[in-house]
Image (tube, rainbow, N blue to C red; front, side):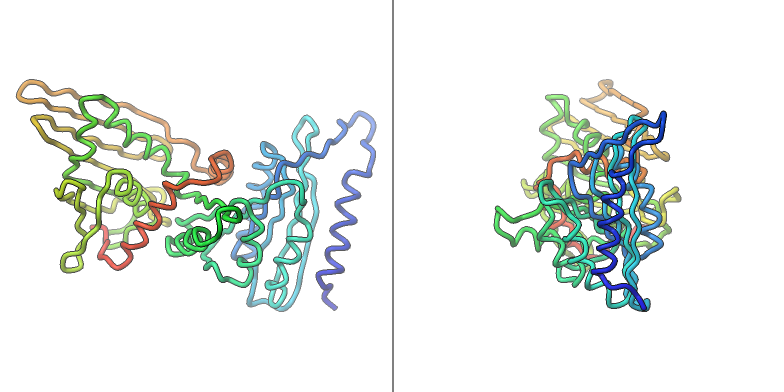
Length: 365
């Protein structure tokens, strides 16, 4: 007979107590338990949960937590499996990690199982790996308990991210969780490099005079613009005051001054074609005798940043830098995301803007 949630939780509780009741062996460094948050990671499959378990362990060594990793298998026979482990640094500072696999009808019981294990004196972060809607029966009971919800639009979908953003935005200020996204965190270096194009005082006026934008993603020709490209486009549009308009099913962008921004979407071979990662970006702006062309071209975990500024014949300045992009591995991304502010209105604005583009024809050539 399959053990029910009560029996499984009883065993988990006993094993958690036993972790700290055992005295260290002679010569062994004593273990000290530490916890700054409940880190709840829910994966859309047991295989994905298994893949993320060492990632969570790595994060917990830098951010002590009670980590709860859950793999869901709604199509399997009813079953609930659990294991308990301590995750310790070489200095003996330890986190707790509980891993569950819920199958069949047990999937809908997972929220109560997870809530019973979350510590009440620390905040909760919910990381949801896969597509989700805000009314999902496993997601909906857990989300209100979280201070922050982390998704990955590149592995899930922009529609999933938008659904959670709209749900959070509809809640009262006191009970509204922050929403974060790993794809958004990946874009932070791109956003900084774009802003750097207009750092020079005389170039700041050109931020309102962008005439052309080219986005390149790692994908096959004909692939729809992915989540990273759409979020980057949403960030640029909301920061620079662009309005999206449709003409015969084609995307048109209008600046605040009434001028237009021509948008070109390209595809290119790259290491992250599976998630249609952002591969390159080019901005062209000009006005009042001054023009600027800025470009970012990614190569694995580095990028080449180029700028050309012209103030007339013979007055041309070119700059080129090789910059390392921040770690794009899952553990590094999650750690960086956890260290960012809980509320990110720029993400909320960009998601809402990009979500409106789903009606447009956004295939990359």
